[in-house]
Image 1 (cartoon, rainbow, N blue to C red):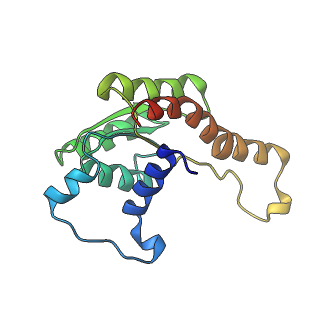
Image 2 (image 1 turned 135 degrees about the horizontal axis):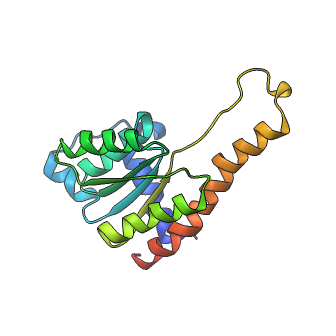
Length: 167
């Protein structure tokens, strides 16, 4: 049986990406949408542009309080400014997910600003090699696994205990 936080994460992603399951995105009024994630807190890695920023925006539009993050302070500041200009509840923090202290700071920011964590979305990733995969080096694979796999696991280790406290 799935843990409740896993069911909630799947529900969240299903709502965000209804088209993945072929159902299309449902149109809701702003007041209906704001109830979906009301009082929920989300931390999102790699969330200052592209898909990560779109997830942050949608969760905040649907009522969540969101902590965006990126390796670069300039990107964090720009994303926070953009989203708060839309009257969304967003804060941000510099976080290189490959660094333990940064991962801890991301979690601590959510706890300090919003009192807990309901969703942890791991969006940050690297692809340091372009070309034939057989030409890549062990160092390239180490970096891919450290950032894309290991860091996601380590973020979950830090986040899930706080998510479990909130049900």
